[in-house]
Structures are given as structure tokens and as C-alpha cells.
Length: 250
Image 1 (cartoon, rainbow, N blue to C red):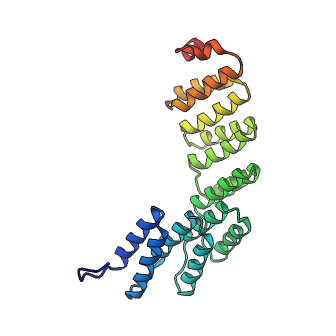
Image 2 (image 1 turned 30 degrees about the vertical axis):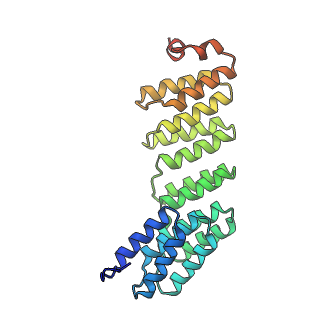
Image 3 (image 1 turned 135 degrees about the vertical axis):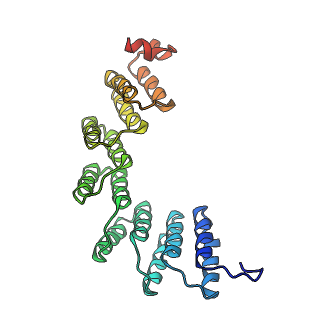
């Protein structure tokens, strides 16, 4: 950069580095990062965050941690975005102890977790089958005055669904509605899928009618799931009928 005699400033370097990281070109990002420093432009927390996030998403968690240490050693204060990227990276790598260390360090530094931090924890726990622990994280989030969004609730609904705990999944659904969070198509699809796999087609169909009544539009996944469910319970003729949903309702 700077071939035309115009030297890039911090904002330009950071933006291009972020662009490289977003498309997975971490080698190019690192090269430009070093060029930036050689050019006398000091990176800030935004620059480091872009690099750390890019490295973590590319599975280079140890390299990301080195950058984090370098950043701190240079007197640049990490923020919640820094920690979120690292925690996500180590969870994805299956390095739970490292993720826990970072959560503890974050607390020691007086940096409060945000909605993204809580989502990262919930998602990791649900993927490991620790749905009850994920539910505790959701409760903690609410106790700290943060409002979960549909993605937090969906993660928990799906976690229970995957373990066949449909009653618990429905309780989460009812709780999110009671708190004023509108379920989306994915929320309904998860529950419908759970009921269909359990061969509880009456409940699956009632959910379809409910989502339509609430103004949530079914998609191709909704209908494919229901058709598959019909075959599971040997309602073959109903599943083959073009207007089977109408026939079932009436």
C-alpha cells in the first residue's frame, strides 16, 4: 500500500485487514498488519479485534492468543469483542478449559459479558448436550438485566428438541412468548421437527396452525418436515396429497 505516495492511516489499514480476515485471507491480513507496524502506524483495539477474530474463525486459536498477549503487552485494553472472538474460537476448537480461563479473566478485568457472550456459551453447551447448563446461562443473562433474543431461545429449544425433551422445549417456547419475544419460522420448525420425529403428528399440525395464526410464514422446511412425519406414522395418502394440510385442518 502507499505506492502512489499516499500513506494509509490507521482506519484504512484496519478496514483492509478486517476485509482480509472476513474472507479468510489471514496470511494477507498478517502481512498487511506487519507492514502497518513497519510503516509506523500503531494498531488499536479495532485492528487487533479484526485479526483475532479472523484467526479464530480460521481455527488458528493459538496464533490468536499470541496476538491477544501482544496486544495487552502493548498497553491496549481488550474489550468484550476481543474476548467473544477468543471464547468462540476455543469452544469451536473443543478447548473448553481455555474458554473458561478467558471468561474468568474477562470477569477479573471488569468486562461485563454481553448478549453475544451468553449466546456463545449457550450454543457451545447445547452442542455438547449440556442443555440444562445452557438454561442456567440464559437465566443468568436475564438476572443481569439483558434481554435474550430469538437466537438465544432457539438455541435452547433446539438443544431440548435434539434430546427428545419436547416438554422442556415447549416450556422455553412459552417462556419466550411470555417475555414478549416473538418466535420465528426456525423456532416453529424446530418444534415441529421434534414432534414429527416423536410421531406426535397431531401436536405438529397444531403448531403449524398456530404459526400461521400468529403470522409466521411456514417455509419449505416446515412442509418437508411435516410430509416426512406423515410417512413416519403411515399417513401415506395424506402426505401424497397436494392439499393434505388443508384436508387435515378441515
